[in-house]
Image (cartoon, helix red, strand yellow):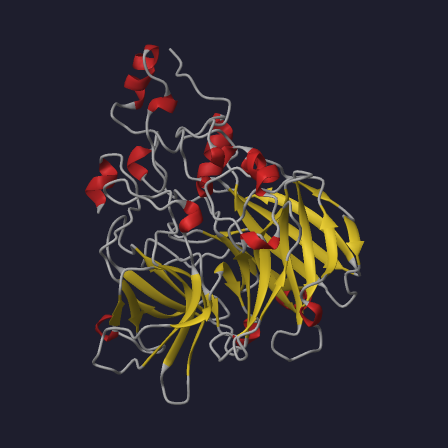
Length: 485
């Protein structure tokens, strides 16, 4: 007796409208361009989106639980080409062979028992959960979907996700065998522009639900040079994450070189939701400044607290703030942060050449309903399950001035990337590139801005397809690609 397998995506907002899975691999040459792309731009914008290749077991599966699908926009001589391909993870390959989802079935019975009970149960009835191995139909060696970030390092293009014990390489494989003591590896590494090192960490380093964090520093040739290294709810089919309105926000600090686990110092702030970081650096007096988005509400509203409480999405406000503190202080309560930008913002980017150093320019996504977005018209086409931003913003941290680019009343923006102007060493001098959702045409666009004239678009690149909401991406200059060959 065969089990019933769903062949359609669930009737849920995260699978509807613009969020309907794309599921496309292929390439398009010479995309249509309105405006002009400067001839000095030569490189590739890589971005990744969670894009399930098959309908999930779980009716209300989170939108970012899909397979990693990487898009590459190559810009050269004023022209743009597009390629897209899924990351060949173990999960992706095995599910493609099986022609059905294999993650997300609560094993109240064995697989054979499920077949026998098919008369009254289907796979879809089992409430499998995001990042919960106890809800899988089969066992995976590497469970990752590689769908959160894509970075270029040591001659490899690496697809990353927070729960993976290693990266997935798209170009020549990077195999740090015997070097990685943790079961996890961050999807949000930072790169030292002076040394070329990749600085990163893995949380839940010893396995699901453990409080351990492992710190890594990886040299430009791929060698690890510095390493410091609630399950029961999941076994019962619960969520991997659960918001705690009582737990303080903790910030761990340790020496960059030669650190031991006992050297970690934990600073504390009131219960908050820390968003993506902008940058961190030490000043001449040894004080640390850390810029990041911060909210007093649960930004990941799709994971409620233990009582099932979650904020209404439109009530959430994430603001850009700066914590400045003395890492040698015996006072472990962080001082109140400085508010850098009052609006609802996220997905912050800087000129990466100034990482680990004081920065002046910050680029970000911003939501301001007063700008003129036609929510009534585009509402039925939005899809759901993720925060919305209707503009791109540039903050001058020194003057406090914010410039805003509004792409149109039927548009929403995704995370931007900064491209330095060739030959310029001035911070923030260059271009901003972002994927934009056009809900009128139900297709995607690339919008390019010149930072010298931020509020006006330099070029709009049209795609004949729709790319659902992505997570992160990065710009790789052609000179860096050639140097690695």
